[in-house]
Image 1: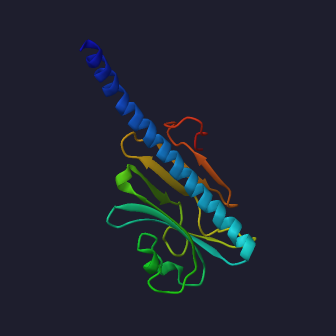
Image 2 (image 1 turned 60 degrees about the vertical axis):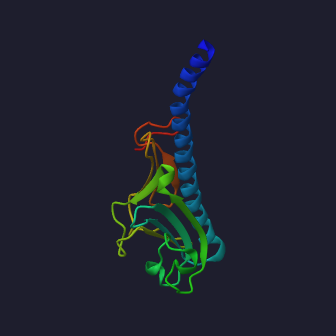
Image 3 (image 1 turned 45 degrees about the horizontal axis):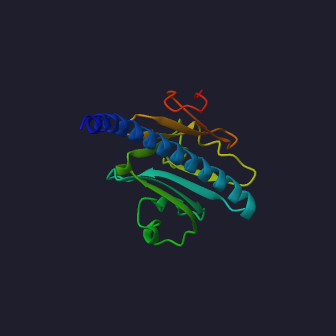
Length: 178
């Protein structure tokens, strides 16, 4: 009976630690996925020569955070990555290359911010072969864990280089954000 009580205390102490560890791993996974999406968009524009857009949005209902990569055709401002895939671009013929959606109920979400989003004033990045996006500056995508408060930030600089860093040292193994 005593052994069972001791086991119960140990399990009760371990469960929150395990939950925290799992959430931190989810934060890392989402940050790496977003960094991969940005690198994919950059390389895709070099492969096919077309301008590629990356949408970084949150569902207005607060249910999910999402990212979408599509080939630019002039109607990118109509696309919303939180819609159902068949209606993401409002019925317009847009070639969608990749979609990433994460439900905020899983405890991890992300939010994109920039010093200046450029003329569209929305979280859309345009990648074009041999060109940078000077109209957009200071892009930072912060991935946060709801329970632990753990954060990673995906940053993209003026020459489209992507890096993952930690703004508050809450996750080890990543450089501090500058």
